[in-house]
Image (tube, rainbow, N blue to C red; front, side):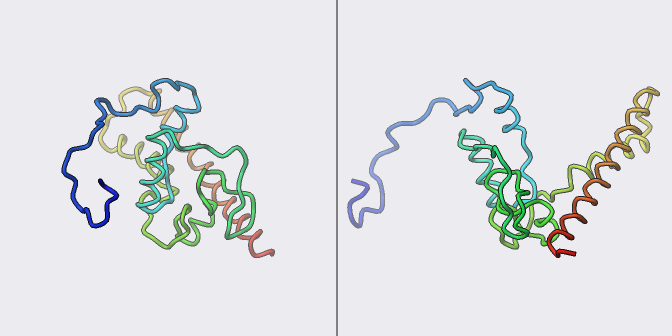
Length: 166
């Protein structure tokens, strides 16, 4: 028996083995499931990122319906499931947004904005822009990203003033 005291090794192989890998979108093809599967887990340490990826993979991830209270600023600004710290606080304090520990952050929170800004400049350097409409789209995307960066900066400033009470 495996629960027998002192019995360290098994004498037989695993009885039931899956022939196919579990797929969380086999029967659930809703928009919410697709959104959960494509979600990027940013601002987390390696362990917490793996935990959330496991939850998504095996259909255990449940999204939040209402924002949760941040443990640092005590505002209802946490919009991601299983997180305890909001994104501005996690960025400012360099903490994992899920466990709250000062670990190495695998994917920083603003990398998605930086990647989209860098991609158009690479295309301009290599000369891959052959259509004039493509260049206009890149310029529009850049201006949209700059607007989002400004909005994010304003949000961080407002968040800091709410925390300090000034």
